[in-house]
Length: 458
Length: 129
Image: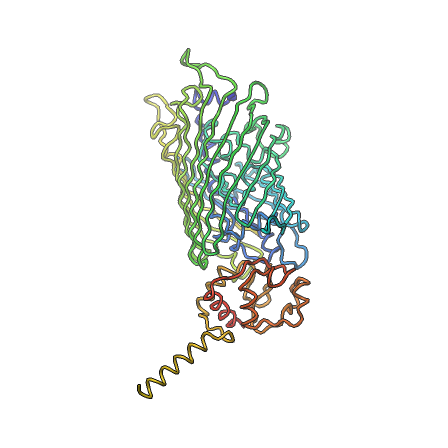
């Protein structure tokens, strides 16, 4: 069932709502969303570049984890150099200059983060991010961001092969994935912006479960190559979301009978890596927490390849394709066209293709194509009944530190310039909000934005 | 066959025997640097005093096993009081899974099966001192 707000959005596009959503999504994609933190470097003695191809987290949709980074994550963030206990704290500051195609350019300290992360025991470790986001007028909103707490049993044997078993308690389906190319782990996804146009697994979708649910998954890695994970999630009460710093308008709704699975084959060839995976999620969602539930079923597959060589020239390619089938619990009549009813079923489709090249683990360029498509529904998706969106990301970045030979291993910095470009929005390539003739219309390109960011972590 | 031809043949044979000898690892240190980066660098540094999950490999060739004072070695490796990391010892150790070479070790490594890569790597390690 669509919320009143979404029905309203579908009927009469609220430009402010859309613009703010788009701005948030662009910032989401462009601002630093680093998962690599100096805590882990201090704990393991490793360089950031050992786990991250570009020596600085997954900022701006990548680059991806290296196979070594995947193993660190699978081992519950517990690997250590064995040289005493390290303080499990790190911080990150991000200053950004954002220049939208239309609108006012701004320069702000856009994000300040505190990380509590690392190893508690040889079997227990985790990652907790507390994030303060600039929300205008020198004010910040603090929220509990991603959480991933793990218990892991390592170095088990099954049929003479190595086996790792673990439990992850996390608040974002897909974030805990070791390959880290699913939308929640990439911190990047197809821009929705208006109504529930993306899949449930896409953190860019309106009412996404990201950070607003809590769940547990059981996972295992067999023979270093075969990964399997099953789990379930439950949404946090609205009051809890509010206490954790989230606006309840983004509530994913009450979800029940939720199942999540992930299977992947991944092969570390030292100089190369590839993976093939499938992911699925099924849930019953009451978006307004009362009334009939919508049945959502996501099923996707993903492919990734990395050329690592001697780490001088790294190429990473990833592709994610997720299809969501929806069976709506209720339908309703169009307010403008009597007798026209919203469909009782629908499908949404997210695709992301990303290619990154990194030189000397310091200089990089990344290009991504992002598409979100859905079946036509004249009542649910305004103004044209078409939710299709397409966008591209072009990013260049420089990470001066984070390598073995860097002068410091306790701090890191990343400078990036990103252009986010829309080519289709609301299924249209012109007048995307469907305003009447005589009123200034908006093209997809008017939503573009150029962002320069500097992130420092210590 | 002239004397010079015989001499050349002898030199080639001697050179071939020398390169094939288990006592000498005639690898390419430059290529070994690349092998190190892809096989070892995530867990080991060649910087003196820089321990990662594994101990620093600075000066590893010729070093007594488990001898760095600031690294927490496994009991298994500490027990090998007679182990010295000669080129041959390293060759033997790395040509098989670490858990097989030293049961109880903390090291997680499946072994380097490519003989040339292994020789190149050992040659490279020999230059790190």
